[in-house]
Image (cartoon, rainbow, N blue to C red; front, top):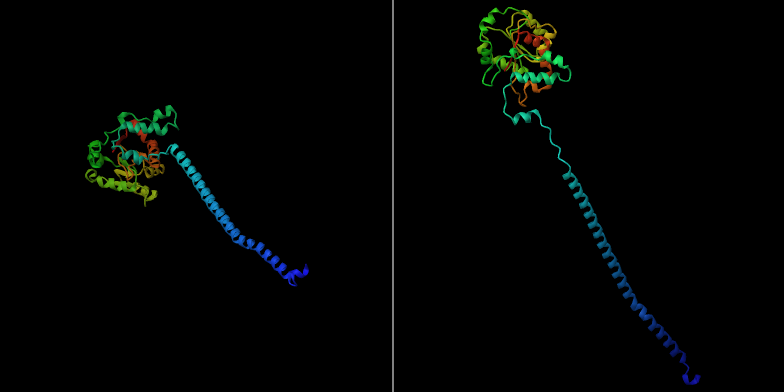
Length: 289
């Protein structure tokens, strides 16, 4: 049997085995690209899913942020808006200026002393109507107003000889207003001497010397400086007959003298220093310009 197969039978056997093995290995080599393709597809799919997931997450975050923003806006819209507190300027700008009258002064007294004085004390500080002069109706200049309330000025001026005191005292809000009012006195004052009474650039001692030096007929100034002079006895009320408050004049912010707390406080203290008593006794008349 061995002879029939020949001497090289083993070659045929070996070659067939090799070919069989080769044939079995070929499918493995062909499967490799397929595996690579499937892995790439899987990778791409995962990436695509990751991208979609990221987009969805971002979209959700944006949605949540928008919801929060809307909620904040809703809360803000529900809260009542804070109203800006009206200033004196706002109130006065919206209304027409009205001339002051005796009732305004009486109301000022009641409001100013309501928290510090008893009812009896407030009654003692109230001024009778008889002590008020006619009030400026906003048509007068200072000279024309003084001519109306003091028609016999020429005679009064000549008879005044008391030092450290004036016949007419005009109370205003500032140094600039003082100078302006003194200019307006030109047609009224005649031969009378006018003294400006404010703190700017002028010391109290200088005012005291001026009042001691000679007779002054009219004093124009701020309540703070006039009060300081009365306290130092540099100015007296001995000859005072007319006290005029610059009531109706308004500054750039439309404030009157009584609308400024510091000035109003000084003015009220000034009135307490013998002027209210003089008004009640009938020796001093009070006018609102």
